[in-house]
Length: 99
Image 1 (cartoon, rainbow, N blue to C red):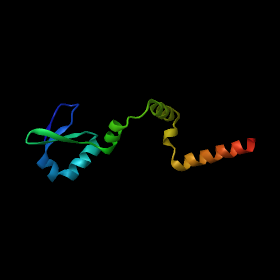
Image 2: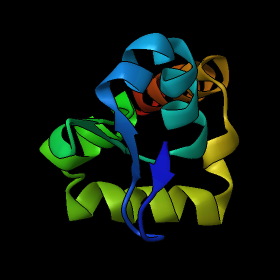
Image 3: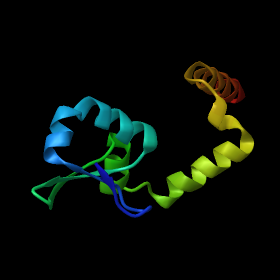
Image 4: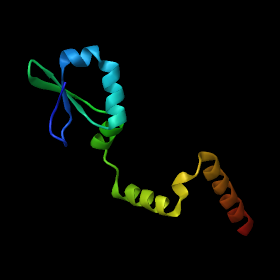
């Protein structure tokens, strides 16, 4: 296994990838880095986390990024699903009373 520059991933041989696949999967997920897999010195594939794959294949729209920033600023990003459901029920109940 050899490292490339800081911004690129780590280069591993196909043999090393095959024999250490589980460890490489954990490393990709934990370190949020990609791995370039080469065979006989030629890059053949890239191993990256599912999170990174989704981010690359379907980038987050700007509106969702803005909503996320606003949620963090208000502290609502820390609410559980139960808390969110409770707030929705209470809001709907208030609106029903107004009608």
